[in-house]
Image (cartoon, rainbow, N blue to C red; front, side):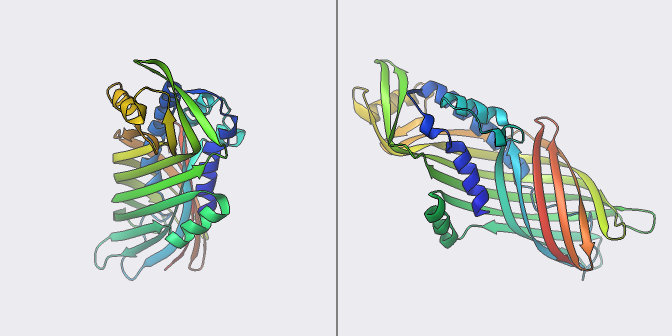
Length: 329
């Protein structure tokens, strides 16, 4: 998880050393596109860990517990625009799959007595000690919380001929943040104002990203155990809201007459970013419902399951991947 978060931040900043004089308007437009794409992908990312290979784990005392890692890949177009605004190119490793938004969490599912229902819980968290270790080893500071609860109802129970078929609903909450150094001493941004073209200078700039996601997800899934493997497929429909706030964290100065506070006032009246002497930020939100297809395969060795899953969003062609190791009885 630590390496995944570091990779996300470093990928976003790898072109920072190539900065020259940058247009704030161009940077804002590109960043709006990037954060908008990211906000949309968070809806998919929030569902990671909820859906296991078995569409239904069975009545109590059947249960399972494990750990999941994965990522939803936001469309590369927004990231490409952001890198172009910096005068650089998106790293080729991200060009095909897109920019990963990582997830790592523990998961639990347990059957309910007397009813064809199972309940699932999941949770992920970066403790402060781990965050400090990440920052000392990579220069990247990060925070991460991911929790969710799911209820599934078995429409059909597996037998020799029939598969498991279930429908489910879950609530998912996710919060994260990344701050990473650019590796350059300062960066200047040109901005067109009522005083003409003025410059904003950021000293030792860092890229800062923060996000939250509150979603409700509805699923329909089919699975069938065949000896030691369990293939499965399903569809999900996610509704809710995701927010992304990001920008540059730095000691700021400007050539605008009146200083930072006066320029911030002008920007606030002209759809600009929020500017302080500690940096500037933009915000984007996504509320559009997201439909996805998912499927995968698990390998079952007695009570140990190794579960791999692929998610696909037809509307955006975005992908998600996850892997789960669990004990299931």
